Image (cartoon, rainbow, N blue to C red):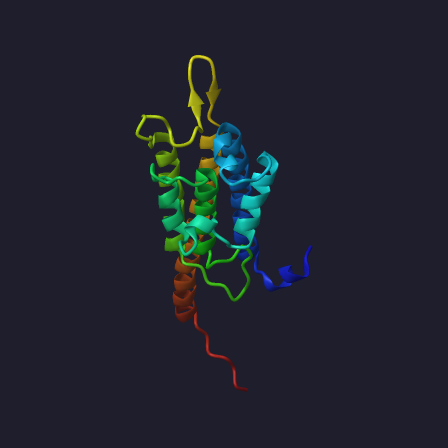
Length: 205
C-alpha cells in the first residue's frame, strides 16, 4: 500500500487500476506489433526489439510524442499512424496515440485522487476511439493492398486473435468506468432528492 492511496476513494483506486491495466494491455500490443512488424522498430534507429519497446514505454510515461509528430496529441497522432503515407515508426505512433487518448480522457493522469472529477462522456469517447483504431488496424491497406501493420491472423495454417482480445479488454475497461461515472452522477442526484424527501428537523431543546 502506497502513501498516496490515503488521498484516493475506492472509485479513484478503481479508475487508477483501470488506467494501469489499459497501459499494460497497450504495452502487450506494442510488443506483439513489433514482433510481427520488425521493419517498424528498425526505422527508429534502435539496436533491437527490446530497446524499441522500452523507448515507446518511456515516451508514454513521460508524455513525449514521437519526434516527427511533435506538437500533435492523442487522436491526431492516432490518425497519422494509420495514414498510408506516414513514413515513420507506425507501431510507436499507433501505440503512443492510443495511450495518449486514454490518458487524456482521464484528465491527463494515470493516478486519480479525491480532487479529480472525470467526465464519463470523454471516457466513453476514448473507448469508441480504441474500437475504431482496432477496426482500422485490421482493414487499412497501403497502395500495394498490403496491411499497414500485420496484427490478427486468420488463415488455413495459422490463427492468431490475441490482438483482438487485448483491444476488447481495453474497450471493456473503459466502458465499465464510463458506465460507473454515469451511475455515480445519477446516484448523487437521487441521494439529493431522497435527502429532501426524508429531511428531518433537528431538535433545539
